[in-house]
Structure formats: C-alpha cells, structure tokens
Image 1: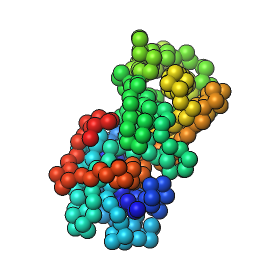
Image 2: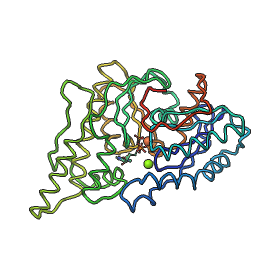
Image 3: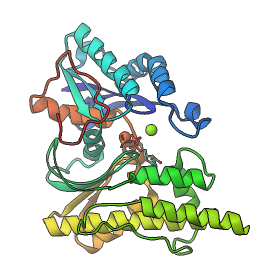
Length: 336
Ligand code: ATP
Ligand code: MG
Ligand code: FE
C-alpha cells in the first residue's frame, strides 16, 4: 500500500510517499521560514500564497524521489486540520483534485495524529497502547494512544503551548524566529540553574500544564534588567527557562506512565526535537523502567511523512473522506 501524503497546515509545504505505513520512500519539505522571518512570525496570507507556489513542485519531487508515478499510489492522505484555514485549504484542494482525477481514495488526516504517528517511522516495534506527550507550536497534550488514531486526552495546557512559550521568550530576548531551535542552541552555553523561574502548576489537575506564569516571569526578568541597566546573560536565561519547561513536561509524562501503568512513553511535535527535553526524558524513563520513543528531529517538526503514516492506519481501518472534505482550522484531537 502506497500513500501519497500532503501537509500544508502552517508554514511548511510538504509531500511524502509512504509504503505500508512505516517505510518512507520520500519526504519533501519546502519551508517558508525565510519568507516569514522578516515579520517575526507566520503571516497567514503569505503562507497560503507560498503554499500555492510550492505545492505542485513538492508533490512532483516526492513522487520522483520515491521512484513511483501517481498510478502506483493506493490513496491520497492530506492534513485537513487543525491549522491556518487558508494554508490547509491549499493542501485539501490539491489532494481532492489529484484524488478525483486519478480516481484514488481520499483520506483526511488530523495534523496532531500525524505528529504522534511520526513515532512509528523509526520505532518499528512501537505499537499502541502507550503514553504520548504532544508538544508543538499550538498544542501541549498528554494522551494515551489506545489504538491507531484513538486517543484519550489526560492532560493539556491551560494557556500557552510549549512551542508558543519558546517562540515568545525567544522573541523577547532578541533571539528571533523561529524561537525553539534558537533557545535550544543558546541554552547549551548557559547554566540551567542560574535563574530561578517558576514551574507552572494547575491546582487539582496533575496532568495539566501552564506556561503563562513562566512566560510572565521571564518577561519581568527582562524588563527589570532593562530598567536597572543590568546585562542579561542570554544563554543563562535560555537554559533556565528551558529547564523549567522541561521539568514540567517530564514530571507529568512520567507520572502519567506510572499512574496509568504504561511502560512505553513517546514524545511528538516540534518541541520533541528539543535536546534538553530528549535527554532529561531519556534519563527519567531509564530510572523508571519505561521505554522511551521519539522521532528524529526532521519527523518532529511539520512534515508529510507523518501524515502518510497516519493516513495508512486510517486507510486500513476503512476511513475514506468524501469530495466535500473541507479544512477545519480548529479541529480537536479525537474529532472526525
Ligand atoms: P501544531 O502542530 O500544534 O499545529 P505547529 O505545526 O506550528 O503547531 P510544529 O511544527 O509541530 O508546530 O512545531 C513547531 C514548534 O516547535 C515551534 O513553536 C518551534 O519553536 C518549536 N521547536 C522546534 N524545534 C525546537 C527545539 N529544538 N526546542 C524547542 N522548541 C522547538
Ligand atoms: Mg512550521
Ligand atoms: Fe505541527
């Protein structure tokens, strides 16, 4: 079974060919980062236009690199939400056109189900059920993956997503966009215990996250330094902020695995490529007898290979989308 997958929910135009669910024949990603950097973040109108410019070429490349033609493809998978509506529409319209013209089944894929499914690419032995920490630009969810495409959400952020916090802090200290990788890099030169930042706690909800208090503390620290003329040590600030985020994420994920009785823990989403999160989670899992799974960085941030994997499991479970498939910008996890 060969899936041609398309992803255009944010600022990456991506296409991939996936064989039998877990073998990636091609993974083409055209990033718009350079275009949006001038504005300090993703501009939705520009994202849509850039997707339109790139999508045909990206799909052609994905087919060519996989050494297949459209005729060989079993089904077309496409992200239909959540994401920017104009950006999603480009991928959805393209996928519908190709599927209709080539008479192939169409499968709408949930973007976050894609992020989780990225774990199946390199961990050939990983199968549900397991606990997954989803940490991306727009989501921070702690879920139990009960089966392929079946999630029980046990915790979520009450305010900012983890990636959003990274991006906002990076902007505030002048590291620029996209913030996550830049904070990660700066933190390597800093002391994670240099500044005492709070760990967000949500009363009575041991699996929920909160990052707005931490973000305010960082902004206050920066403003205070500016007013008093003190020099800010960016690596120390980055490392201390990151340490607080990682602490919150790891402690809840490990607690969930232990309390719910799972020996398998995976991480997903762009923040899952954070080197400190990976190292601390690895260590904590080892200590608690839990097997730790994570995708390679290229499969953590937005890509179409993960969409192809999710589409494959939806396909073998019998899911088909109609020609009325539409972009759903605020699609919730577990909704169809
Ligand atoms: P969503 O998947 O929730 O719709 P998105 O697609 O924009 O949002 P992703 O592509 O999964 O998000 O991830 C992007 C986010 O990951 C950004 O917030 C970025 O700063 C963050 N990120 C990427 N690399 C790192 C890193 N090394 N450390 C921390 N954060 C990172
Ligand atoms: Mg992106
Ligand atoms: Fe994403």
